[in-house]
Length: 414
Ligand SMILES: *Cc1c(COP(=O)(O)O)cnc(C)c1O
Ligand SMILES: [Zn+2]
Image (cartoon, rainbow, N blue to C red):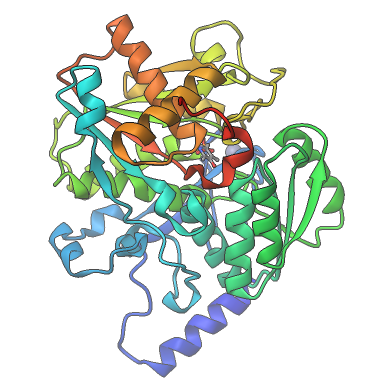
């Protein structure tokens, strides 16, 4: 695979002598456990050294002028230097990213808040921010010569993978819990994917993926077992900074399942510091991991109720994307919470539905239950005094409510 990529690039090079093939500053893949570096020019999954997530590093000292961004396309691909795709022809895109950042004045007023904003990821292709990760993962899979992909999912990741695989001409196998709302399965089928239903949660789906893939027929795009979904999701951090003209909010509320977005936003902030896009000493946002009471392994570890989530047993929640009982990225999530002086909090399914309803009634935003959970958690943290009414609070609404109708039926106040 490495060879085909090198050949491909060599051919490009002779085709366009003297023109830059790539603007990507990709440097290596680094093991998050021991720091050892591995080649970013072949297909990689977990680190060969420790079987832990690999993260991409870039030559950030090469310098990129952020003023250049102004001329670029309004998708996540505007950050090409800090994305891993080497040949622009390998981009598999449906127009993902650069979602709106909306002020929520009417909702803010209900709690006497000065500044409440929401980044609406429900407007991405396939209706969630999973499009960001999958656009990058499938683009890199294509660049590395992969032909077929498989993924365990709580719903949105499977839909996004199915769409991007269709766009890339690749085969897709999606393994999801049987209780996932029908709309997720139907949309995967619309993209021509094979859908396999499993009794249990995403960790049971992951076991099924291992069994189906015992001969290695598929490239496994499981979150953080594949290094580049993180790179797609980190672009939310770049966009928040750019859309706020490089002044970050005080707090980012993030609905945390596998934690890829949370880890990604923190990675983006660190990268922007290295690029000089943020000023030295500029205040950074506190990150809040919001989870469902039915499945809150990060909250329990953060508050010392358990040493880690390796034995955690979760229950299903209406916020399907939060039902991740044993996230492999747990150490990285905790690191981001600690470094940012953030916190972790769980809300009930009833509270998140009320959050969905309030976002809808006051602001015309139909959020996924994961997004509703953010508003519920915000009210709780205000009540506890952890959040102040004069702070700029950003809700990262990860998905649209449209696929969750099975979960939302009949909740509206009349
Ligand atoms: C997957 C998902 C999440 C959790 O995202 P992570 O980055 O894995 O924590 C939250 N909300 C929605 C709508 C999702 O699909
Ligand atoms: Zn290692």
